[in-house]
Image (cartoon, rainbow, N blue to C red; front, side, top):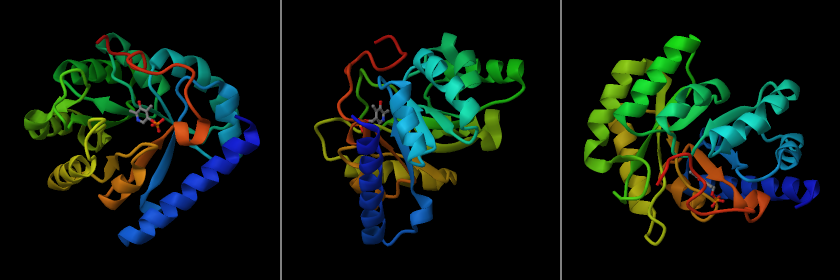
Length: 234
Ligand SMILES: *Cc1c(COP(=O)(O)O)cnc(C)c1O
């Protein structure tokens, strides 16, 4: 993918977001685009930065650590979200490299993040990931535990807990999942809803997404995909 092509594709996604926002009768200022750069080289991230993109998503701590600190020196306003399942032993590194961890999904991880925060004296923003399809292999707090877990996290981290995130099951209509997550966020007064990817971000916007995570529709197919794209051991 050439730099020009990446810039053009970002424009196209923005136009599609504009259209989806208009159809939903929502405010365009309330929907942000997160460009998912996992497995793509730093040069692709740079092309997106030159095109004005500032929000990025990575799945793996180690990949984020090699790619992003050098870019931050030149683009201090870029923001990095970690969107992959996170092992507790990577919590400290995750808190160092990321502005937002979108995948807070279990008590052991919230404990590890709290310890990291104590050590670093600073914490990233946090989203709770919910396994809305209750899929056994998937990261995310199960549906029926989500509400109690969100409450626990807010007690521990206060306003650092900013939103919810989900990845609906692949072969299902995602809309009921998006709708359910939006309702849960409403119950907890959480403003940020990270939902929707290349294949379904318009549906997510219709259901209230405030952050859509788009990878392949911008950067093309990933060199590697599948179960390896997370830090959690399956
Ligand atoms: C890879 C990934 C995305 C982007 O997926 P595309 O289908 O390439 O847009 C979004 N969210 C998460 C959590 C991902 O792992």
